[in-house]
Amino acid sequence: MIYLSGFHAIEERIKSGRSCGPLLVAKPGPRAKELTILAKERKIQIDRVGTADLDRLAPDHRGIVLEVDEAGPEAEVSLEEFLAGLGEGGDALVVVLDEITDPHNYGAILRSCDQFRVDLVITRHRRTAKHADVVAKTSAGASAWVPQAETANLRRALEDLKEAGFWIYGADMEGDPAYSRDLRGRTAIVLGGEGTGISRLLRECCDAMISIPCLGRIDSLNVSVAGGVLFYEVMRQRKRGSA
Picture 1 (tube, rainbow, N blue to C red):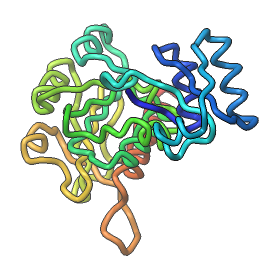
Picture 2 (cartoon, rainbow, N blue to C red):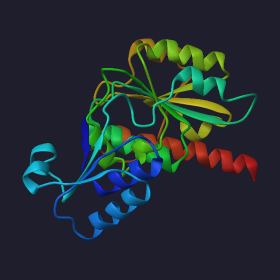
Picture 3 (cartoon, helix red, strand yellow):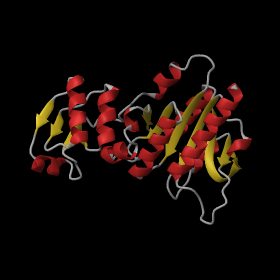
């Protein structure tokens, strides 16, 4: 089992309607009491427990913890289902994460994905950050909403996206400025791992590499920050194109 202790993470998981519970409550403050009321409204089981019980399950709790089944990502879909549901034409933005191992980065990327309406996040199972509570907290609950697909073969996933009409762009400091590329339509952005970048096999699948022109003195942006900037650029181009 996974135990969510962040207020935002608990709230968004309950609101998402996905299976969860019971809600374990010790000595809740005002914010935790609001979550208890929400849980009652959604008919989620509420158990009164001792503080020591929560200390054992989630040491950084604030008087309340939500129990969640640990099977798979919170908003799990399959790539096949996603592609089948796209239909003909239309914009779509997919983000592919290549060896993102820091759960804080993973959560921050999901938060940006939620804000900029990313349609799907694809990760390689077993190798991506899996600390669900940290991810849920860092994403401010977005992990309950952003569709996520796991695959054993990211290269094959990119090939499937290409067959469905997607253009694949890898994020790289040496790439073309993102604003110089047409990122509308069906677009997939590949983000490489912390310190390692995009693997050679995935790089070979990319149609082009794109970058964020920077003026700072250090080497590059954090991967989660870079992702947010690139997702914004996609949204900006789409809005400009529809104006």
